[in-house]
Length: 279
Image 1 (cartoon, one colour):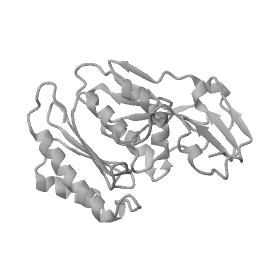
Image 2 (tube, one colour):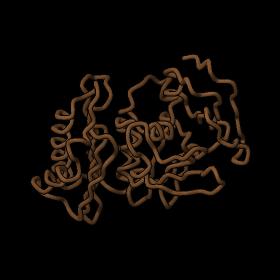
Image 3 (cartoon, one colour):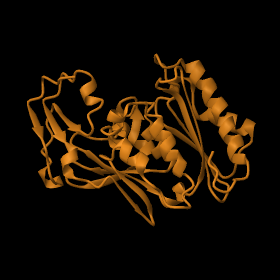
Image 4 (spheres, helix red, strand yellow):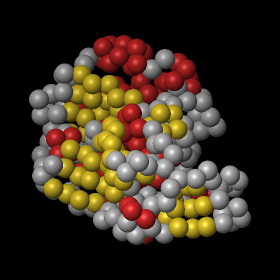
């Protein structure tokens, strides 16, 4: 899509070169959504790729992904032994259906900032307790859990002039066992429900619900709940109005699949782990 309203493209090399925000500005990551449809109100693009952020950093504290890390770079990443959640990275990458051209351009930060219910990077980040580092327009920095960053379809916690710098996932979250379930109405369709369960060494269980709902939800338990307790928790946490309704799935179908997958995940993580096995 040619964006024929764009008058200027800025390519900052450092934070100090980021321009003062104006109406009609947009930050450009990979551009896979930005260039997919007309952007009538946009006048200026700020290309974040020229900031030169390393795509990812691994240390004892966990994993940090730059907002400009591409899906392809994330999928190729080799995580340390002992990070049992490693298979989840590839599962979520593959939930973003697209050609290799899309994978080599689309960014983790772009997927999160777009805040579509089916965004698989939102699911990954929520399940792994990710925290967003945000460069505020006033020159300060703030940190927001990703579950509080995504507010609803195409709504996030960024203020005018803010830039999502990175997402950090703690090592403790990456050490948990995981189970992943996803469904769409067609083989190559957008996710209608995407759920992730995690279980820590002390037995604590968490269930992340995305795609079927308008914003990500995470239910936590001190131990593994029984089937009835899990169903009651889902009913209490997700009112009918929170189930998403669009061409990719009716709310009643999304609700059914959410409860069905939740029980599959609960049962999967109830089993004793096998050495080297992933759910």
